[in-house]
Image 1 (cartoon, rainbow, N blue to C red):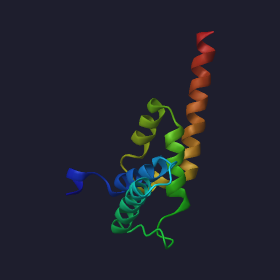
Image 2 (cartoon, rainbow, N blue to C red):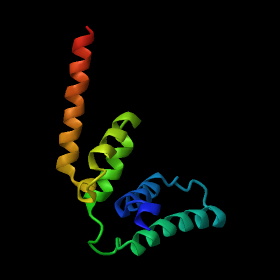
Image 3 (spheres, helix red, strand yellow):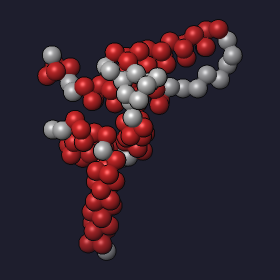
Length: 117
């Protein structure tokens, strides 16, 4: 089952990402508010089913921040990050590891730029 549907941490990350990407409700109408409610509720309940109850401390700020940070990365760097953490679920919300990785990418890019000039 795990091989078929992927790693649990990736599924959790996907639901957090979807919550971060929810479009704001700009029109006050029953229909628009219902859509917002349903979309938010869907992902919050899915996280709860995965053991990440948002009303408790079962979901960490690091897990949420990691999704936010990954959304800010260029796709090529995001892929490198996913390769970095692929074999170890615990690494997926390790902020220190992420910042070390990001600093390494900065230094690599700086090195490449220096060799091109």
